[in-house]
Length: 224
Image (tube, rainbow, N blue to C red; front, side, top):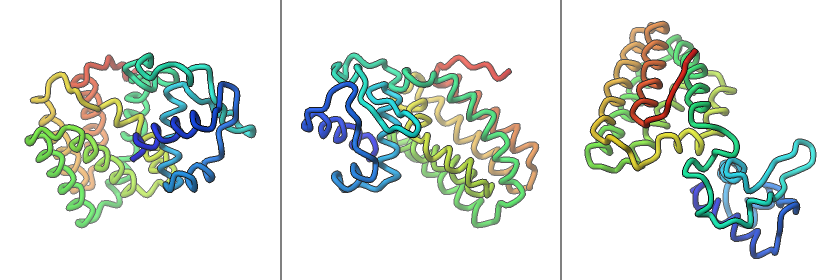
């Protein structure tokens, strides 16, 4: 939905005759005009900012940049290159989710574990059926669910806000599709540790999973 809204917002700005330096309408107005929810508009605006076509200035507003008039084909293959590198996103996840899963180990109920198992199973089924985009969505939902179980709303909101950026680091085409089944096994190790309320092992398993993800996606990674 956010990907579709990116195109709709671009089209709206073009139809309004807006040019570099002009101020983008507030998110509340965009939501009303496009019939979308505020959170989805926020994700779309984040994508546009990451692509470098708009810039957000605190206390002033959001403005169109010079890149707005360039053809979309001119953008980097990594669409958020103007703002983050893929390595930076994985480093953020390595530090943030390692702590989050330790917190989740204190709180995980039987229902929580069942929910994680179901998401992992859905991801695995999508991989087997070569529905890779859906598999990546289920993967993200599993990680977001762990943040919800941890009970830290700030971490949960950070992950939700950066959903388009995080999922882009995992998006097809995948260099080695056969290796995606490794993620299913790695998730299983995390879930089993949560079931034992073993936060230390869960954190080790999570960090291992994230490092392995960078290897599968051919992203160079330095943890420290």
